[in-house]
Length: 179
Image: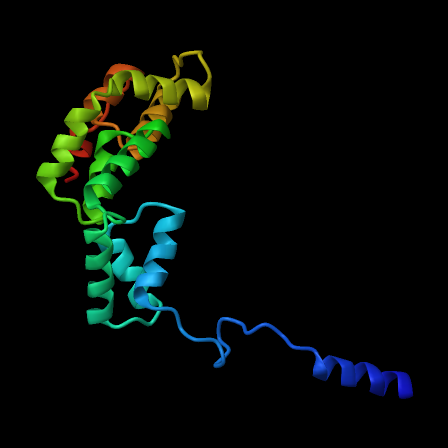
């Protein structure tokens, strides 16, 4: 019994580190929080604003922090868009998906068009590489298998014309109408 009492008294005396919800721990500023997020990877202004608001930061503090980060060249939407585009192209995504993803981050349509033109990607070769990676080098004579392969490429964001030329499958032109 004495041993238990002594162990309990030692536990009470030991200091513990304050956790994230501990009132003794001061709350980080929106600027510090955003800088920490940017230290991990690039973020768009829209994405930073969303994450800071979810973290409980007010609108004016959030805007001021993001503006300050932009002035210091820590946050730049153009740089973010270029990095995201290069990354997604390397992962094997097509132009339709890239356009939608960049648009969701608040990148302007004209800038998206410029980025896709500057990328100078052979989308047919990229689609063919994705098919080889997923299904191997052998082609398919089965129409159902060709349709499955075409749907795979459409989900990855390749245009219907590209999918048709790579898989030789009939693809609906409505797939190109995605903004």
